[in-house]
Length: 353
Image (cartoon, rainbow, N blue to C red; front, side, top):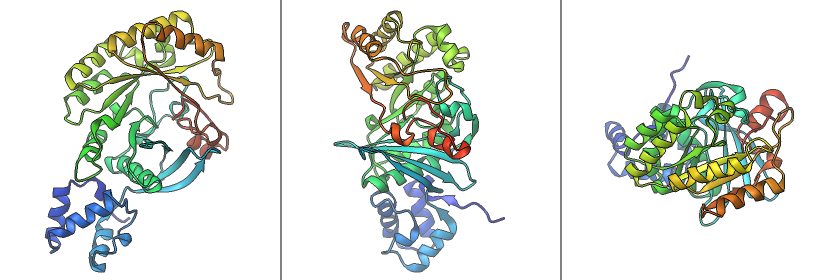
């Protein structure tokens, strides 16, 4: 069996320069390779036409770029959303979503193949966890989506998996995203979403990348949240909220609350008041997400009046509310749906990616 090639996206610019120097190349080659990888988003070394052919061959023998191939791509009817199913070198499949926008598009990327959290409303959780993604596989999604859109968009870790349970790969990926010589994104243009892994929040706060943090809340009631999100039994809501407050104080970054509205489950006036209190404590806007309907699932989308009442109760106390519409519903854009379709032949569902 041939040895797995190292992912060039995992190399720091200094490490890449050192490898090129050891290969007898002049110093300016590093700048050329970096430009191909992070400005032109080359998908192969053959594209790097200003490099000597023998160097391209050596690079291809030693390294891979992202280690992913696109096995499915679907475009929504309004052409605003594109969903990609990527296959890793070992056959595992993960999803990424490109949401076109101005001035920046948004890339929704995965951090794990599957997820072990088993949130009741999420298709990915039904699949279980296959494995963590490497930093190269995470960055490979960004590069592939940038290749499609022509520029690096805002990056949100809201695809498959719990990012804070894979920080050994997510942190190096964040460093590459914010490195001026690589993807050069400002940390404010990166959001990491979590179901509430307190230890991970603390570790992320201690890093120097410090992205924005989004908390997937989905219920202000601890017992109900444990029913919807089993991880809440390990990291109770009060503990999670304390960690979020500390994250904001330590990093100076804004927080965001994500709330999936499940019809007649978490949309009551009491729920809205509870979310309002949490939002005011965290100083965070609330992003309302309408549940994506799923065949065979016990949950249903909320009625229009449920949504409007919930929103009004938040806004009457000055909470900023955004509403994420079900973009890409016609292309299975909810987290886990496209992968689920390929596995079973039927669409599964979850929160909108």
